[in-house]
Length: 165
Image 1 (cartoon, rainbow, N blue to C red):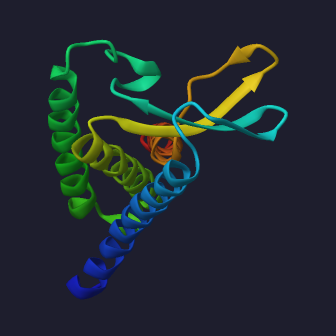
Image 2 (image 1 turned 30 degrees about the vertical axis):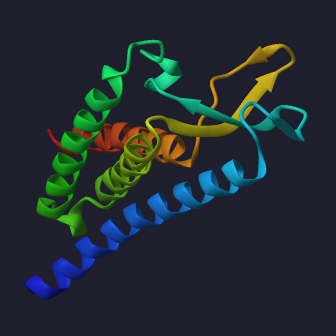
């Protein structure tokens, strides 16, 4: 396979990352335009749409810190995004489709959330599952992409371990 065809295949995965960023940012903009902070719209008996701003990381980790966490998470996400993009561009995609898919999702999700941190100082979360009185932390499309991507990374590692003697 020539270098042009390989380069086109790599771009396909970067376009998936871009699609995740666009879907994430459009969904956050829509929710932010139609709801006020903490306003709840019930979608299903177990699912609400609730606008929240998270200044921390997953599960609001470090949300109550004095503000330094914004720049820490921006820097960390920037390093992760550069590393993922570099890994994706160096990957032999034709042999590692699941890995390329996983890296693309994680890259797109990380970029979606870092855009929020840079623009707003927090991440917009709005998908809020609950079961009776048990509420799970709110999340967004970027978080979903990161989670699915991480799951695919684990699957790829499992399949890779089985391929090697």
